[in-house]
Length: 77
Image (cartoon, rainbow, N blue to C red; front, top):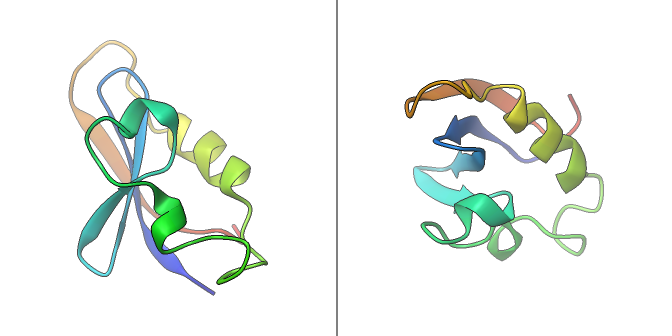
């Protein structure tokens, strides 16, 4: 099972760090980071649900500030 550190930046950009590299989980983060599908996709990790990762990442957002929050995440949580 793939794992990484999930965070929310700014106005809802969900980012995951996998093995030291950051990847965009949603469209808001795609302007700044490569897509998570480069390392996590249905072929390489069929058990993962990207939608669940997005939802979990959005719960980390602090909608009133430009800082970010992080949490350890796996697609199965």
